Length: 141
Image 1 (cartoon, helix red, strand yellow):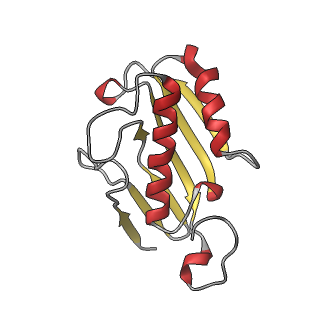
Image 2 (cartoon, rainbow, N blue to C red):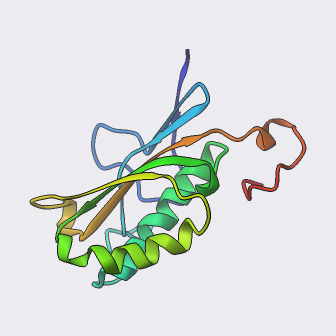
């Protein structure tokens, strides 16, 4: 099985020895995404809702760069600086996964990079519609 490195300017650049995403066969593994605006080191806002929304947009950009989308996510892990903000994060998260949400783990960590409040990583399936197949209606196109 081959491993393909995924990189896009539509999500924050990797700032260390890791890739934004890896495609291995029919699976896509993303690095954790913070709520940072691409091309900057600035958070989308100070509130958990703002950072969650931006983290999910960054996740979507990485997935789209390798032929997938949020509809094909099968598992996420959410890292929170404060579990007390879980309900607020969850409200925004639910907007991105309104039907058939993926499996998920959510954990509180001691700290996140750059002082972030939330980081989200995902495992997704690659979509066939980018490979010349008929549009499957998933939103990847």
